[in-house]
Image (cartoon, rainbow, N blue to C red; front, side, top):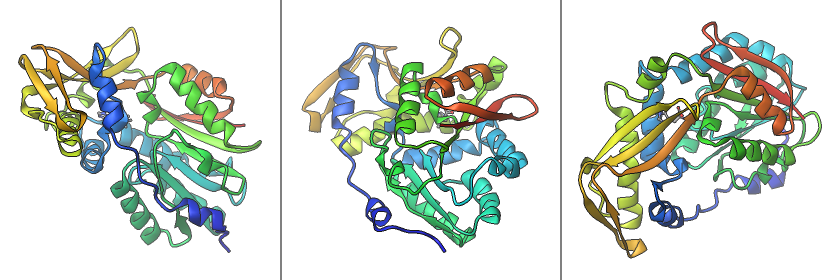
Length: 324
Ligand code: AVJ
């Protein structure tokens, strides 16, 4: 029988998200200008990211899916019976289904709590998981990572999934703080499965963020479209170029939007006008790349002991299991 407590039901009611106004005002007032990557993931952005995951150049998703497919049974053998599963930044949960398929062979029912900032992605996740896996009950959690108390409300033992290399958006200190925050909401014996992209041939990494079809450029520019829609902004997305490059010193791919001309852009809701020089950039995303050693140290700094790390034959991507 599946255990669904009242508190779980209550927690699954989506709460309204705060407006993006504050983040946009703060980010565009800064020098150099920047915007938090989580703003990339509105309904359109999440959909474009789904398209990115299918691009021939974008290796991370299919490489991680390969690792999960080959090692699903072994990963699940590390888990205690009746584990509840939650996922940070679940998106449409396509890769998660690989693990859930193995898990329902080991335990009768699974409560699955996907957390995401995109309501549309969560609805898709729920529909697709529940229609394929009748023994999985999905409890969507709409929100960002600022509040992780929903983890505490689940019955232990717990498994938290933080896969897809989303951690790569975060600087080292923020990554450690997030892992510690996850740990704070868990108890002894609970586990975290952390997926991260590894450092590799620069050309391979570069191509993944500069695809031929231009989907990554659309994904990046959608941030301006979103600001236009949600804050009555007057960005002309065509007057900004998608820029992405490898920053060796920081071990990360950077995404920027570069103004093709000198221009002023008004955002009505903020009652502000922002000035851009020709060539001035808005830094929109970082995608850190790791070594296995760095990834395992990150887990330890977050308060986890490393149980095992799985990689693909080329060592392009790693999935590491930590325990509290
Ligand atoms: C969702 C953060 C893992 O860094 O590869 C993909 C985001 N941005 N292409 C990544 C992304 C542009 C992606 N993560």
